[in-house]
Image 1 (cartoon, rainbow, N blue to C red):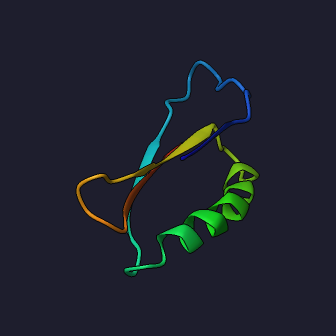
Image 2: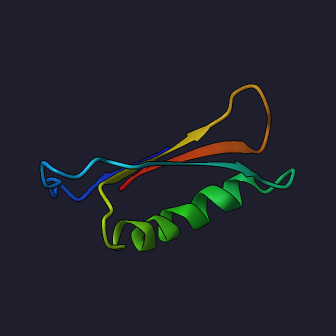
Length: 71
């Protein structure tokens, strides 16, 4: 789906934090969500501490996504 990386190295004394969000989208709105996320990922990637993110679509359940954000 979407992946970005600002290529800013973390200081060696700081651990990376993985934030996991399970997203449930109303039936029939997945394509709208994906288009909206293309814009929203710019907001996420501009936040302080951001390292990278990845949005994955579930193949087993319609309308389910997982968003992984490394801080």
